[in-house]
Image (tube, rainbow, N blue to C red):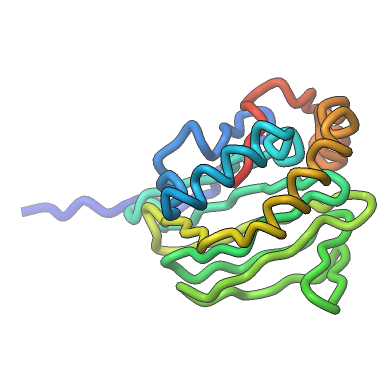
Length: 190
């Protein structure tokens, strides 16, 4: 009886081959109450979706090693809503800045979010690119708690003010440096 062993080796992945996170089943559709879903719909209609791009760079099966790597590009001022995921995740800032409360994280900084811990941040004035790294996870969820009316109003106003600017930005600084034109995958909030 022979036992088949998996060959170890290097696997390459390329930015030009990345697919939009929302075009995969890696993350489930965000869960939220009907009221929050309606409020979130108004923020998307105001232009919030134009401020984010999420792409899966690497997704391995458990047999392959079980890693996933997602690149997130939030354009200047983009307000990522308070949310949770059901798995641990490491985040690494590759360009720009992220503002978390009174902390500003810049390129080379990062943070760890344990499963079900609520968090949020906003992109700094130059936007932010973040790598999202998970291991041993085939799927994860996203839960968005109830939006307060004042938060919805502020996000709608920001999205309306920045929508034209965001729509003109087609490719993140890192993808541009790699020669990727930003046409593979659609923009979308994650």
